[in-house]
Amino acid sequence: MPELPEVQTVVEDLLRAGVAGRRIARARVHWRRSIAEPSAAAFGRLVRGRSVRSVHRRGKYVVFGLTGGYSLLVHLRMTGQLLSLVDYRPDRHVHAVFDFEGLPIYYRDMRKFGRFTLVDDAVRPTAMAHVGPDVLQVRFAEWLDRIGGRRAPIKALLLDQGIAAGLGNIYVDEALFRAGVHPRTPADALSREELRTILRCSKEVMRLAIRHGGTTYINFANFHGNPGNFRRKLRVYGRTGEPCRRCGTVLERLVVGGRSSHFCPVCQPE
DNA sequence: CCCGGAACCTGAAGGC
DNA sequence: TGCCTTCAGGTTCCGG
Image (cartoon, rainbow, N blue to C red; front, side):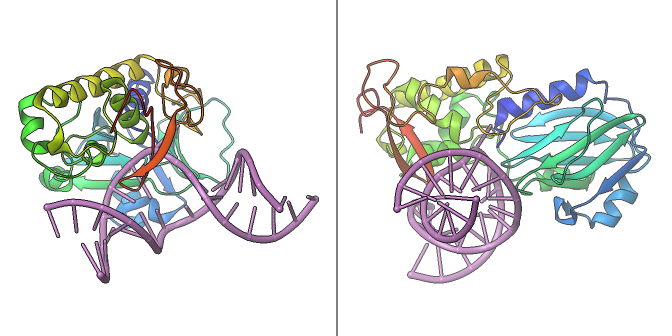
């Protein structure tokens, strides 16, 4: 579920909780496939005893820099959560528990799509090679190089993490609404200025959502189990059949790039 | 190169 | 109440 703003919220919570500098006394894995590599058994052995040197976000990944030249890459996919709650009783959806010397952190994931990858720092660039520049950082010229002249629908390209990382289904729809662009528009049919607007709107939506602690649509919860507040600000996502906040037209839904897409047929003409 | 569909999983919601 | 279908914030793989 989490897109860039939700992952950013998790990272900020981890730092605020004082994870940086802490030692991982123990890591227990209850669902083996949560660990992409190495094996779940080797994972527990390799993680134990290392301390956290850094925590940051890259696209939708949480990246833990660990002592001893290892990095832990965490992707929460659709329903993954990292939680640190007082008096928490783990339920059946908790698939891993990390003991940061008295600070327990729970990995909970209803749909079990999330993945942990432990890599040697030497191969970390390779492991993340498919992740493009962060959408909040990327400069227009670089982004245009990657996206310009392609025939695919703009929405599909915005979702492509190799072009720019961080946007997901909710924020792509929100950004395209703000830019006044139909999600199915082929990228090569857009002018340089329209593309500039789309990137600007993407960044604006991201910053705004971060300020509101992300979006809780189904089950996003931050570190302390609290929902994000951006849902109230959504202009099109999940509002099919409701009136456009700008012009009053009934919002529509169609499938683009295999994903449910929400838009205003008047504000975003095809 | 591009696209659609399936797979990976579980649960919520709506129709009958 | 229960059964069935559809849908869900993501990514990857496979075939046409």
